Length: 278
Image 1 (tube, rainbow, N blue to C red):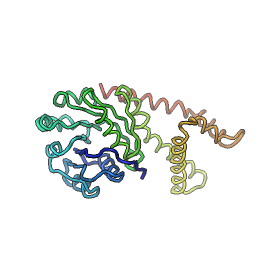
Image 2 (tube, helix red, strand yellow):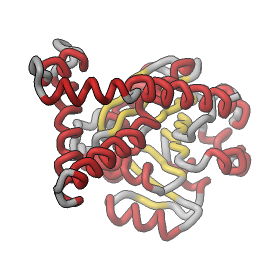
Image 3 (cartoon, rainbow, N blue to C red):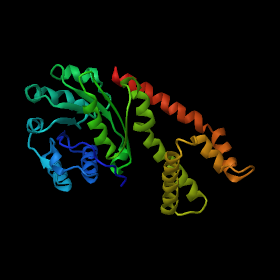
């Protein structure tokens, strides 16, 4: 697991929802050096909260209101469709305790969140991605006018414990969703396509899958390491020898629509995200 140092001392995070993403964030933060006592979790399914609490060594509550009362930052890790009902039930507790509200619910804007919450609460919206489950996530963070820089930094620190995190304007969240939120699905399909091609040419499926996944992982690491010096295009050129095998394959991929298909996927994702947000 890729782990970063945790930089949010004396801050308690409460999680409503104990699913895969909440579990990845809590376990990643603890692995990065956070005190387990900094976290308390709950879930509509008590067994899920207890399981996460036991595996990460953190606290568990049997009620959403109990989590609100115990935390400085309330992380809403529930499905977007149930979020309004959850917040309606917590109206009094939120008005009394006034935590920073952090939402990882896809498609729910700061404006929409504000309409569901007591007035003038600090609200921070986060969009993580699935790779947080292995400590290699990418998250976008933005806050409303009531959220201080210190509060935003605390949430960035939390998300950086399971990968990387950037602060961007909310208007750019649709583009981020395509580039980081949805793109892992396409990368997985690219790995699957490479795997099938390897099987076609005589490799066993497990071996082909292992080779393809490691090639993609290593390429991503190299792109990150060289990001200040070489673009992805520069790195691609570095692999292409004149008249060699790589340039032949690359030209065939471009001829089959490789780049236009990725741009089309991003365009469709951005359009759908904006549609859902409205």
